[in-house]
Length: 166
Image (tube, rainbow, N blue to C red; front, side):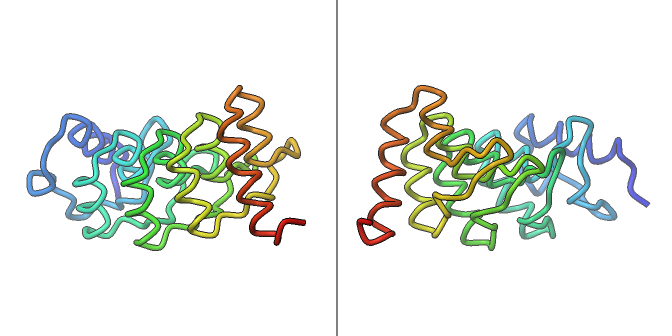
């Protein structure tokens, strides 16, 4: 049986930058969420810790595990504009169109914060620019709502190209 405080301790050690070799994960469910509703992999992705992301995946963390509200590590990397970690998560099998409880996708996360490189990576990885969230917003709508017009234009241009210009 996993101890919730053990996962929280692991998360705190990851945040402190402890190398994977110094982290004891024996008998831990690496897909369990800590007190802030995120798995260790989600925290590592959010903090831009590629070495920890790689180590956690090698140690048995699931790239598709969800935390609070249905967020994934790919949502975290996308919201932070970390294209390197997003690319790694995608190569490990992350769902490019994973939707949160509110229907928010990683592309919507990248778009809302104007992370054009990450948005382009997700689009090139077959993210659906036409997916809508619970408000009926696409990624381009989310970007425009936040004043990220350049990102919205990029997504709309990509969607037009993908539709054959229709």
